[in-house]
Image 1 (tube, helix red, strand yellow):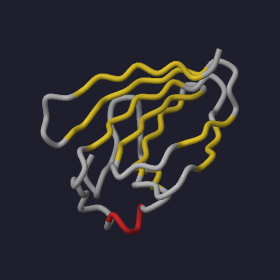
Image 2: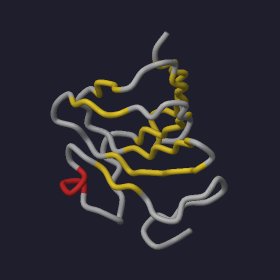
Image 3: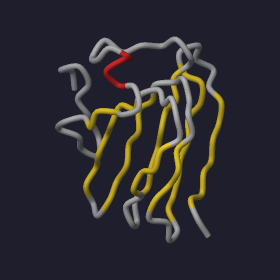
Image 4: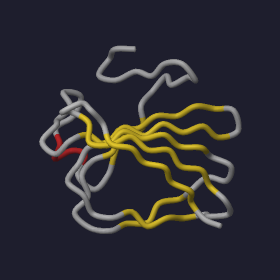
Length: 110
């Protein structure tokens, strides 16, 4: 067993796809290069987290927390976020503050 992904397309012109992922005995994953920004939400040990992910110019390795459950939004190519220039997110991302199971803060707005 590994990472179990389910992905669906979106009707929104701003969103390419929405996905969920569960972890079964995987400690790291290899991400693939891509031109999209994303929002990733995950829960681990009862704590909720959220992050904005940037476009990636190369593959990379990322830790996968044990027991974590993920939900993500991959934006359409060309979508930008006011909170950070796309260049600042290139090959990285930003963990969002004040995340709970019901809300998150993006660009100062909850």
